[in-house]
Image (cartoon, rainbow over all chains, first blue to last red):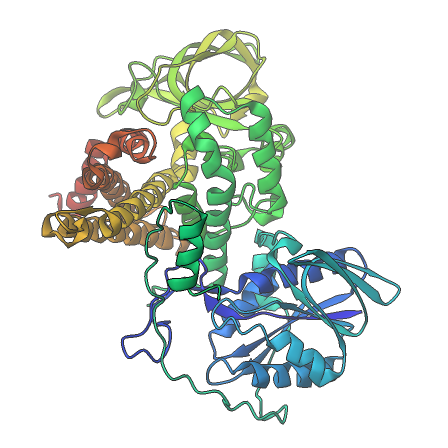
Length: 250
Length: 390
């Protein structure tokens, strides 16, 4: 089985994010970028499946501008076999990205697409679901564990009431939660080998995908600073504050 | 000219940094408190680093090393410099001088060192032979086919955990135009060799948990096969293989300074006094400006010296001068930067709750070992003036 893993380039999770002065977007100029942490987990799982003999090839895919090349090279250094870069002016929105992933999946015919559950920049949490819908495949979302046997993936995800267990037949789209695994280090031999691994560059046009934006961002605001908590005297005051000030109960 | 790291270099930096932060930082407090890392834990670090393929990264790939060039290896050293020497020592970088091993020496010393099975240490300094190394009193006398070593070494870093030591000893005299001069021979001495003892050294203000040791040789008899390189040619192989160790010192100073700076910057941006963050006071803001400028300057001096070595110019006086400049400047920079990082933190900077007081103490030795600042200045000025001598 071949596994397609999508990797997104986002602002380094340890960087303090700032809004651009014109409030059009988050500032990315001169900001350290990194692979989306959930995508790291997706890649790690795919590599483990390859090492376990479930998969024989791990192909990484990233959609976006030229800087995605670095993210893909990192994925190759971590252990992926081959990389595909679909070059777009900027990071396309979820539906366009899902269409591109769908088009690549049709060419590559993977048994599984492993994705991060969401990008930590836009936090849409849509691309995996849309991709599954466009392909007409099953989906296993927010997985904190995943096992493959006889063409079926059995996975677990955390929900409010406990752990939900799902089963999904391949081919399918799976999305990774942070608890799924711990991403490995890039080893020195793999770092040195990464440059020699196959690397393909495509465009949305070559895949016959319209990658234009359909959503318009009106304004980006910094969240209001958190106000300090208050101590209440009794339950009555708590209920009153929840109703009158926080307006979370009617 | 391109000053950016290529992708491989960036990944090397990222990997080493992540390992240092995730695996080694958590061990620092205990190391500092107890003065040592349990050997089993050290062996675990070796196993982890081998798993990463980074063990003996300085050694040629043909013999199982990482095959990094000087520049890439310097980047690695810079990131390792962020943590304590008592921890980074387990990220093995066997001495390059072991590449002078021949015949059976390769099986007995070089290859096990590259595989992380044996740890090496280097012994030159003696109580009365510091900067004036050739004045060493440790002697090696030929006796039949063997050599007999007598004398005492001190300040021998991590000899406590080493399996064998590369020992420099005076093996005779030669006459030169400037009078009689000692001839030096290098020996490979193993723990357990009769007449050889490793003793605990002194308690140092710098690098707790990275033990300096005293070596005692009392009629330590070694076969001629333990001579590294040629008899009486000890300084030749030292010059041939050890020219770059000062770059490692410089690089580690840069890494450690950047760590201290990260604390200082955070503190300046978050600590409020008199109604504003203290970084907005020029007295603090200008400190940050001076700190980062000198750190960057030291970084570029160091990387440029390493780059020059990769151009195959290690034997040139110019490379030697640049290495000396990097070591001199980076070690003095570290002293200033750690001092100012503490100043920005005020009293809290002196408390062991933050690593700053440790970085400040550790900084002191960098201006002394591997050639004092004065020796580096001597090298630099000598290289400048030599071509102009009448």
